[in-house]
Image (cartoon, rainbow, N blue to C red; front, side, top):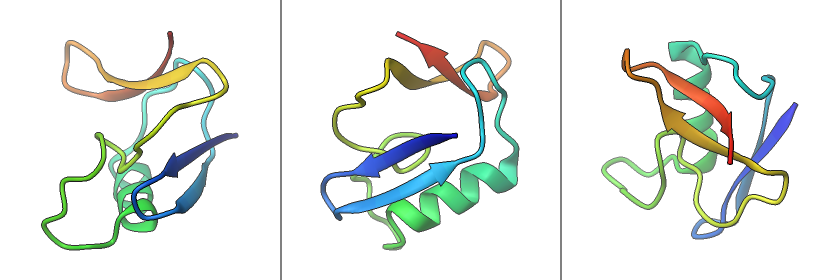
Length: 72
C-alpha cells in the first residue's frame, strides 16, 4: 500500500499498489477524486498527488501510456 498526498488541498489517499504496478483506470479516477475533487483544478500530477514523497516512489507514465508507480 502506498500513501499519496496532495499538500495543496491537505488530502491523503491510500493506494493499493506496489512499486512497478500498472494502475487501472478506476484506481486513477479514485485517486484523483480523493486527492483533488475540484473540477478543472490542475494542482497535482497524474493521480492528483502533489508534494514530496517520503518512500522513494514517484508516479510516471510508461511508454505505452499506462500510469505506473516507479522507484526514483
